Length: 113
Length: 115
Image (cartoon, rainbow over all chains, first blue to last red; front, side, top):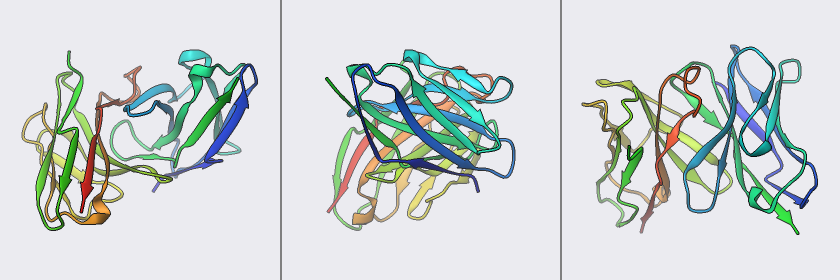
């Protein structure tokens, strides 16, 4: 079955600094890849997704991610962190259009003033 | 649209009790799923359904049952609660992922404690 590994359970950056959250996946077929964000005491919200086509995907709130098949990676970046970006971020992989979606363990992002 | 709704928001059970977590969506989505979220483990898929009358097991199905008699509803049943089932449970629904710009819609969660 497909799986996701998120490197770093906790990332801390200063406001205005680059945000880089790492995600590596394992899949036996071309994957669908997702990044979700979770704010405290809330459900998950989709940031962006890769299905097919362009490997650089732009999402909401200035985030983007690049699908690198050779590295089996889908890292999430944002050029300049904002205090409101503090949340938990989850990478997820699906091997089909519906069905079994697997999530990583999550990375908690802290933004320091 | 109410989106994905879950009831109750909080629940405390004693070991061995049974209960049903309710999930409903009003977006006519075919795909619905249940996850549990535990610290340091992310979200783990319990069961999912690709349409009324069709369900399948996810990563951690033991101790849980589901059924899907209508498109709108996807209840999760705990047969005999155990302390290991203490968790936050999320229900989600979606269209096919390639056609939906929103991915899965998640409910607000149910926080379950089993004593």
